[in-house]
Amino acid sequence: MKFEALVEVRLRPGISDPQGATIERALPALGFDGVSDVRVGKAIRFAVEAPDEATAREMSVAVTDRLLANPVIEEAQVSVL
Image 1 (cartoon, rainbow, N blue to C red):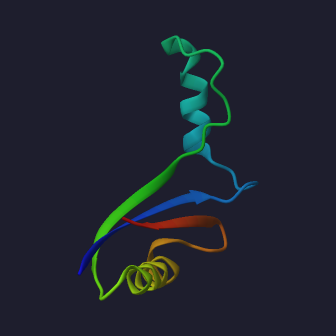
Image 2 (image 1 turned 90 degrees about the horizontal axis):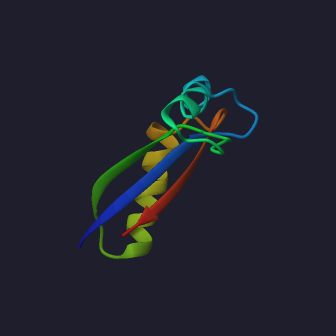
Image 3 (image 1 turned 180 degrees about the vertical axis):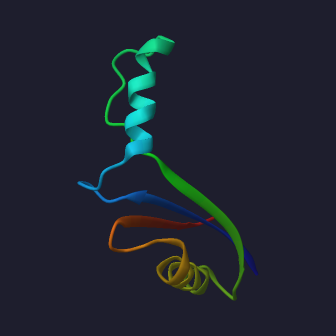
């Protein structure tokens, strides 16, 4: 069976996010007041061929841990759809 995996990677709390800070500073000039705590991350989608959802999740987590996220500064959430 083919499953779709979605991995959302973001910086851990306490890690500086200069991209998020730049966006947050620009928002009031664009008329978006009251927006705060902007954090930038990345979303990665890929297909996984596996016999069942549990195996697809295990494979997706392994890919994430070994390649897609740096566990020292990032946290990742894996969803199998």
